[in-house]
Figure 1 (tube, rainbow, N blue to C red):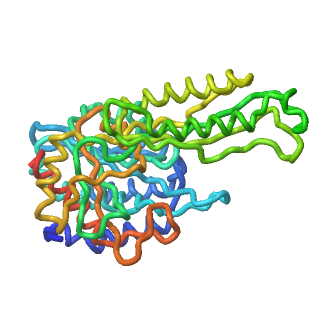
Figure 2: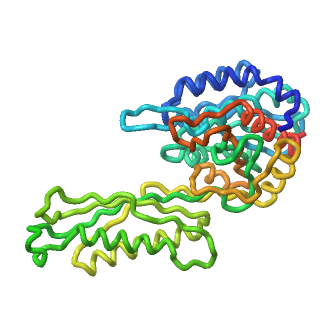
Figure 3: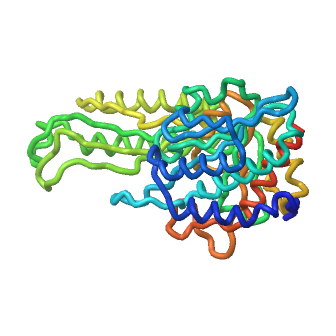
Length: 376
């Protein structure tokens, strides 16, 4: 990797920021200490325009350049992962690294504020892991006053080795529409199934049909992940229950396909239950769109990365989801994957997932290169 001296000089502070944020993980909408620390650091750097009332614990710091130019937004998520039913949280997705990168960029652009031509927004977003904090920040004006022209984010990524990035145009992270299904029937003695409407049988047919829908005919060859992950119903060997419950996953890289399949899901679930004498309802728990990089910006990032990292994966994408997709639905920009795998592989959200200093240096350098390309 090739890192400029102005970035390398921040390494000591990066380690301090990373250590504090790693040691104080907080779940979505409860990032109280995290938000206070970020604001404190920004004030220390000399930022005056710091908005802490955008949404919950979210922060937007704005730096206005000396002359006219575009408005570029750089985003970091803030929340830690809820690891288990006890409510234990840990930074096992790299958001501590993302915040460190954005704080480092904040210092660099403050050091170069007289050279900035345009406006930079530094957005620290709550609740990425939970209920779509990105959309809430947008609804509360994050892309306005001044109007944002482009938006960028990095995500440290466990599948890519250090000293590499992943960047491509089009869908890079999948939409997610997890769902719950409730099947209503007529319970009774399992020895007399003819007098019942068997919710367990209906649930199994629905599950089989949904799995087969993963090969649904579409106008493109885009991948669809679709299936049932949980079936709950009944507690006895000789009772057919009145209700059965299913949960499932649905993801795709194509937002148009997302809407088509959702409608097909609703129709199939309802029809299957009705044909077998029962009823069924489906509820989509959330509905993140796919994260779709714009072509021009993805190509720019690829070019800006050539002298920074040793390897560029220009066709990498993942079925994981990200609510940065809401920003990219509204303005051009890109999500950049920064490799952080070193030694043994531990995936995102695993107990042993960690991020070293090199991905932070690379992420900061890439953000700085974007600033120099568009604003200096």
